[in-house]
Image (tube, rainbow, N blue to C red; front, top):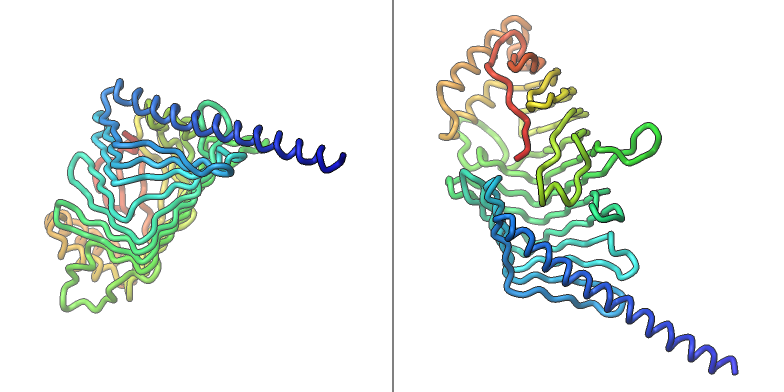
Length: 337
């Protein structure tokens, strides 16, 4: 009798679980298709050749073949031969995103080709219709980025973590902590190092730890409507060590409604003269700008008495920027398009 009851229970459970998977897979497929249709109605280019859902019975795996997304308002576009989102049937808000080995990005000024051996992210969203971002962890192996403007950069590894922070009451806020670390990073300047400067091929340390507060949380509307705008940036630390060259920065700025920052970022430069020489090898940087910067840094070094190391506040105030006592001009506008 007990065995018959158990058999009936297992059959019933299998039927219910199968129904849950079918409902989830149908919801995923129709939901994504509707989202792409809505983007096209907004004037986007939003296309794919095929949308399939698999993974029965425990996973809902969604695959887009030959996907293209382009936002005419921001000028951003992305193309890839495929893109995949994996989720457990019982944890639909915890996703694993997988990108292909080759993909293309476009911004208003250039086109970028990105290749990697592995690129995937763990993405956790808050339950609800707005799908607010809780955290994302991105892992990339053997990254290469090439531009149509004839520059490139590479890294053997890239790790990025973005976690939503709670407020004083423990409620999720619109503040996110971002940690970035690149391994064996070779920036564009590494491909044109002057012969008289002894630098390794790659940067030994390239890392940053930042807390950024925004006008509202990052959720689905950030893609569909408009981007949340920064209200405060707290740079806990940023470190770059490249041979004998060293850059460190830390500080906090608030950002007004027009996007202008106010505050100080303290910057340390070690062997800054060689930094200027490396920058001069980059044809995209104006020699006049570098001449002005070199004169200003030489002046500040003379005041400090240390010609190799500089500790200077980068100050933003009243829509202007100062590097120590040297005015640099208008402050940048920190508006996300």
